[in-house]
Image (tube, rainbow, N blue to C red; front, top):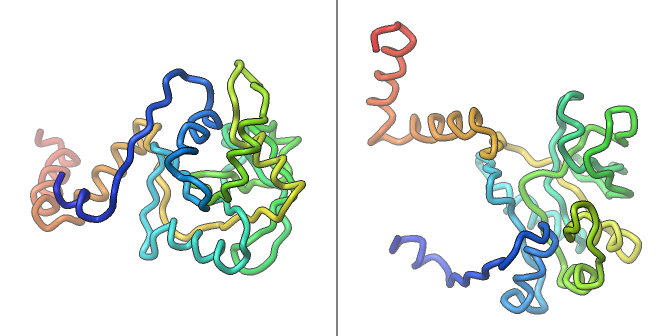
Length: 202
């Protein structure tokens, strides 16, 4: 607990009721203030030599607009994500022309899905505050981002790295095992155990 506490100053904001992911972002307005910020989905993990957020910050600094983390998904998974209409700008970087939330495969503008994180300008707070509740009576971040698209450029980075959806039980276990295997204090013992499991010895 001490080591992370020495890396940065932490503030905690509680979303009092489940009113959507846009409302959750809006709850942080007083803490963030008038600054660009990163919004990271809590159940998304990206393992990469250059951290995913660092990759996204680099794009923000080059282009000066909101940045979505995106990845290509299989056809059968398209309907689970927000999918972007993308105009290529440079290698792995796109300008977003539109976003369709959980489209059918036939109506999806691409197979580039928004995952892991956004880097957003403070303007998003004003748009969220003025965004009416949508599906299920909740305020959705994507609705405010679509409005932002009409005011300023919004970009996407097809980041490098392995993404785990920790909201998926199997991928949560895969992430736990993959990270543990790389630790010198846990890896050797875990590897021996997994070898016994595969051999049917446990």
